[in-house]
Amino acid sequence: MSQLGEFELIERFFHRSGKTAPGVALGIGDDCALLAPTAGQQLAVSSDMLVEGRHFLSTVAPERLGHKALAVNLSDLAACGARPLAFTLALALPRPDAAWLEGFARGLFALADAHGCALVGGDTTAGPLNLCITVFGEVPPGQALRRSGARVGDELWVSGTPGEARLALEVFRGTLSLPQAAFERVRARMETPTPRVALGLALRGIASACADVSDGLAGDLGHILTASGVGACIDAATATSLLAKPDQLALGYGEIPPEKRLEWVLAGGDDYELVFTAPAAAHGAVLRAAQAAGTPVTCIGTIEAAPGLRLRAADGHVRPCPYGGFDHFA
Ligand code: ADP
Ligand code: MG
Image (cartoon, rainbow, N blue to C red; front, side, top):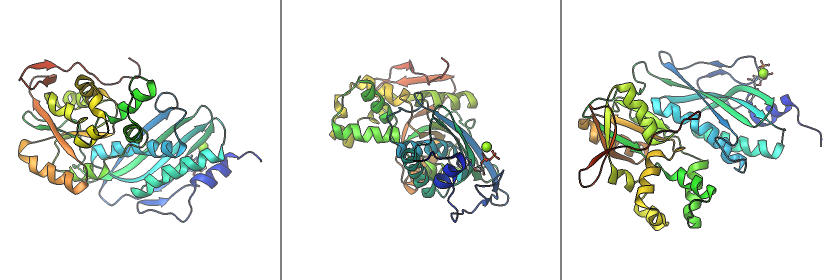
């Protein structure tokens, strides 16, 4: 079989002529793509890189990797309350493996199509496996969710079930064992995270600050606290309960010690949930927005004036949060 060339590869796996999207005036094939966002809206732009061995295991199915590479980028648009428009893909591949590329493209485009987000360009080169996606979204001026808007007295919320992706990592490391059905669930959470785009859009005008959780809840919340010049206190029992919901207990999560559950909820990593704040008066509006978006949310604490992150135990005892975020260079 003859070796796949660079341009043949792009043509065969990434160039889907006929597939056009609103907001895209010119897609793959020219020196630049041309985007045509809705008049008056701002472009929201974000890049995320996935490096083999650091962000994913070499054993991951290519279809799941295609999903995840785009999902982590859409998660950034979600955190800003932006609507996805288009993305570019810069790809370094050790060799042009058609079966791998086919799986990768399938996972990538399934998620892209679900969000009406078109692949409009990129770059392809030989090299150690490395994926970099840049996403473009749109948001009306003044409506983007920012990290800097949290105010004293606001409630602190998180979407979904932070910590589940970490359970999968612990199983892969051999430091945790879970029944098969539980492992399949947490593995899917790690390998095919759901970007909370609908929730981000629904929280426009309601949330005072928002970030997505990629490096652990405590760490990413820390960015909101720093940017907003405030502190926060998390209810430890509520946070722990995010890994002890009835359906999770039915799958065998009950075997995990509560202190580990708390640690993994707060510092698990790879969650791609949204952590956000909103005025207490907007409690009902947050719940309605979450319901409309089909995404569960939990109020886990409050924003306070004293800087730093604290945990409140059931008996009222308050201690500094011992968990931080993940730092690639620490
Ligand atoms: P240039 O030389 O101008 O960088 P290339 O010859 O590398 O352009 O790429 C040709 C076309 O294919 C361009 O429109 C580019 O955006 C697109 N392209 C290259 N690699 C990818 C990829 N991995 N996914 C999508 N489009 C790509
Ligand atoms: Mg090029």
